[in-house]
Image 1 (cartoon, rainbow, N blue to C red):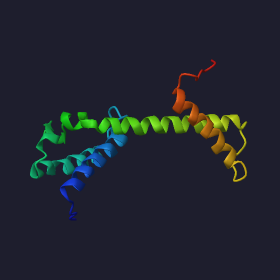
Image 2 (cartoon, rainbow, N blue to C red; image 1 turned 135 degrees about the vertical axis):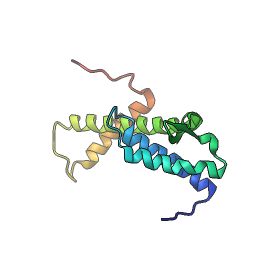
Image 3 (cartoon, one colour; image 1 turned 90 degrees about the vertical axis):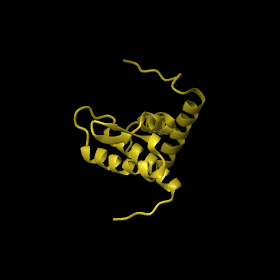
Length: 135
């Protein structure tokens, strides 16, 4: 298979591959999915040919994204995604809870969305400062 990319597209692909492997493997301790690591290594191996050597390093005989790459802002994008996802899931769970276990239907979907929007507005304004858990 051959894929033709511009240098800029290739650089974007590096971000996408890194983020994809991060999602698949970052929470795994001893059971990493090696196939994703191998694809990441393969895609990053072309950096040397495209004047992007600073984005890779050799670790245990494998090409991996360099510390410079990992510290170059990619984790800010990941953190932004994680924060948004956290608040959206939390808003949905709280809205569903407020609906007293009603099954979600076409008829009450707008109620769910309204409740979620209220929670999301609160989270946007105050983060988690007003959340409490009774145990």
